[in-house]
Image 1: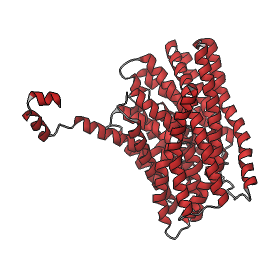
Image 2: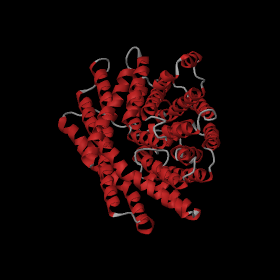
Image 3: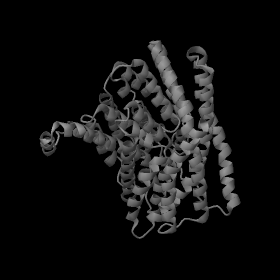
Image 4: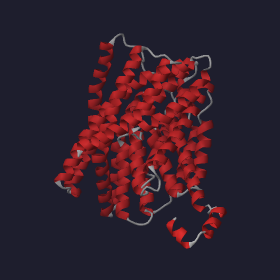
Length: 506
């Protein structure tokens, strides 16, 4: 069974990664030559990325989703809010602290101590997970909660220092990564399964959407407390390697680092599940064995995935961005970046989890293919806008404020389930691929044109998190219009002219 599952996941991973590899190779051999060591590191990183996606996808299916589903269902059956809400906060807090992308972000914001930033963001996620669950239990419409939350976000954004705006909106994306998404989405499905009313499955979406608001508000509030002279990201050292031995040493040094980091990330979740199993769940041995195998796959997959993207994809992204931006017609970087964005979102591990849940909950009414295309278009547009910011230096508020206002307006006209899926997708699309390839791509381009990396380049994650809200809700509006469109008069007349036997045969 596991071998068949791995073969299926391998094919999915290859289909996601090969277009990116082909595109980078095409650019490297034509308009944007890369140093040999950087290109080789990229190819090795792509191999690790493919293997990591294969193991992680199967592991999430075997372990993270059942853990979240059983935990959510059991907490809901208890009917005790004094138990349910504190444990929900603790789950949201622990899984956010264990999110690898948040650790990376915290290390690049020297103006705020790492521990303060991580704990504040984790508390924000825990608090808004509680708010999201209360919304589900009370049956409050998601659009109204989102309107209030983002009104507060936009108000605080107008008061926060400019250097913190990109960090704040980026935080909302990095906290919904490969660890958080499978667990929280399955947690919502477990609650919906116990509720079993007509709106329960629609309400199972939206947990990621509201959990993404907490980090934005947390960083914006921190920006009003911490007023440093300089706030920004630390540009990583992307120097070339002298030979293949040095290149191999980069990977061998990174691998043990991620072995420890992912172990620490998974440990709180495993410990909490083990405690819950002893006290409440009492799952059978076969189910526990399946979850155990899935946790091993998840661990191996995340280690390989993050090693590949950190060591192989980050240098390639930075070099590619700086080379394209240094060309005489530097605006060519915008359409090229849009093409890269269209394909790179397919390699985000959490996108697979969202596609699978959408197809299951809607019984195929919203296909994974349509969702993937909408995400790809949305991310493509977001990269185009982000690179336009790099070249022009316009403030991120000029894009984020109109974008979120339009997204909230669309939420009033499209089906509720599309709104919930869209805001979930915004968090899902902005995962480790965005942080480790597209972010260095924009930073390299910004350095090449002499811009301010802090205010102009960063915010790519924020843009990637915003545009799917528009693309998927637009898909929902089109779906509603098609459903209510009258049948063509010509076709109706033609059918009426047919004899009964012909109509039955048709």
